[in-house]
View (cartoon, rainbow, N blue to C red):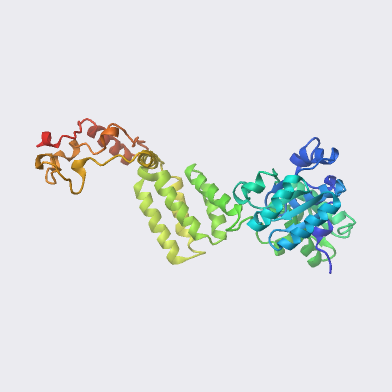
Length: 417
C-alpha cells in the first residue's frame, strides 16, 4: 500500500518541523527538553494538521526513547495494560495519545496512577480546548501546550520541500508561484490538507507542472476548521456575536457565511435572538421584532436562500444603536433575588390574610399605582435599571423613569385612600 504524502514527509526531528517556533525555536520549551534530555507529560492542543502528533514523534525520536501510540477512540483497556507492562520492562515509556479528550473514565483511571509515578510519560494530542474537553484529573498532571496553525509562509516552504525532497517528488514536479500561494491560502494552516492537495494535483497535472487552474479545479473553497462538536464551531459562533456587538458589519457577514456553509441555522437563530435582546435591546426594540420575522422567513425558506433574510437581520443588528441596559438591569435584579429570598409585601400578595380592607391593594385606584412601594422594605431604595439613552426610544423611557422617581412610594396604602 502506498503511503500518503503527508506520512512520507513526517519529520523525525524538530529541525524538520515547519512552524511552531514558540515551542521549538532556540531556547524554547520543547527545544530545551531535547537539549537537556528531560521530558514531562504534556498535551498538545490545536486545529487539525498543525503538527501535534508530529511533534510528539519527533521528540521521542530525538530523545531516543521507546514509545507507544494509543488512540483514545479505538484503543481499549487491554491495549493500555499491555503498554504498562512494556513500560515496566523498558524502565519508562512515552505514550502518545491521539484524541486524548475522548478517553473514557475507565481508561483514565488506568492511566492516572502511572502518570503520577512517572512509569509513563504521556504526550496527548487534541483538537479540542483542553480547559473544557480534558478531564481535570488528567489535565492537572500534564502541561498544556498550544500548537498553532501554520502561517502562509510556513505552508509555502513545506510545499517546496514536498516537491523537492527525495522523500517527496524529488524535483520531478514543478509549480507556479500563484498556484503555491493558493494551496497555502486554502489550507488554512493545515499542512496535511496542503500535502493532500499537492498529491492530487501531482496526480492530475500535465507535463509534471501544477498551475493555478489545476489547484482551483481540485480545491474550490478554503479548508474550514469547523465541526459542530469541535472548537471551530464555538469559535465561529463567538466571533459572529462579538462582530455584531462591535458594529463590524463586514466581519459579521463573514462569520454568518461561515456558519451558513455548515448549514448551522440553529446556532445562527439562537445567537441572533440573544444578540437582538442582549446587545441592541431598548436602543432599537423594533429590530428585535424584525429579527424574529427574518428568522421565521429563513426557517421557511431553508438554505441556501435563507442567507438572504439572515443577512438583512445581521446588517440591521450590526449597524443599529446598542444598549445593554435591559440585560444589565435584569442580571442585577437576578443577583439580588438569588442571594436573599425577601418576602413579598403583604399588601401585594394574591390573598393577603389578616389585613384590614383599608390597607389592601385597591385594584381600581389607577391614579395611585405609581405611588405604591413594590419592593420589600430591605431593598426598597435599590435601583437595577440604569438608562442608557442610546436612542430616542430609550431616552423617552429614561425621561419617564426620571419623572416617576419624583414620587415618594409608600407601603402605607391607607394614606393613599
